[in-house]
Length: 297
Image (cartoon, rainbow, N blue to C red; front, side, top):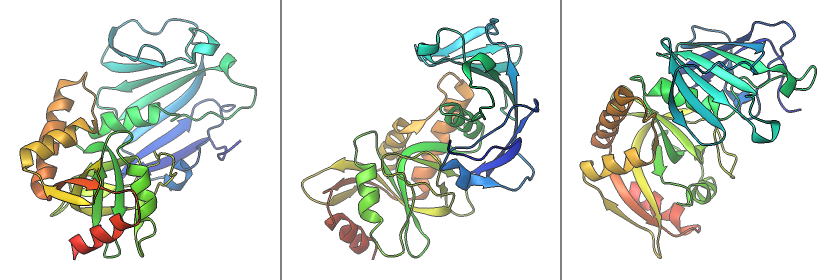
């Protein structure tokens, strides 16, 4: 089994630290690769998460249902807390895990239904999609934004963000740019943006696509590109309003939270005001790297 067994660990993504601990001595924790690269020594956490065994055959969902994917997870709000309920259909209707968080997402409890796990099996407390749900909600409370994007840091330390929905070419572009001398790919699927001194900052994340490229590094954002396939490599400068709308459409936002949506909209406007944004048509071959190099010169 991939991942190291432990009883407490800290995970840092985009300068946000999540401290995870088990309250039951026989509950071992594990972190799957590439999240192991984001493990850090214990510090001052932004989020504290406790894990424990529980009997989840009892209905814990008594509040208002806020969101429902229709299959894998649902979100409820009750008594000043959010409750995420996760099911694996082949195992039946009883959830294998529920996660309860305060409304500011600073504290949470993750409960596991023991019958759904093998004896002595270590659990992944932040198993997908809980990891992304936690980070998305944490960012939306005034901290930043997670974006569908490939992020590259060039040899000078500047960050270049390539934004696009699925099939836009993020992973293909990441593979091509990886051949550029001195370039570092932060992720070929998910990038986090946060405010920085003088310029927005872009951060790598553990969430990747087929390229399996993930790095905990960060860089100041220099340029932002919205990807599309084309017959030739070309870029067109976008006005701020159009760029903000496109960035918002490629972002992960808890739309069930009005204040989070309002913050995310304002954040998109601030990012697209701070850096030049382009509509970028590219050819999926080696010529795109040379095109970008010449355009940056």
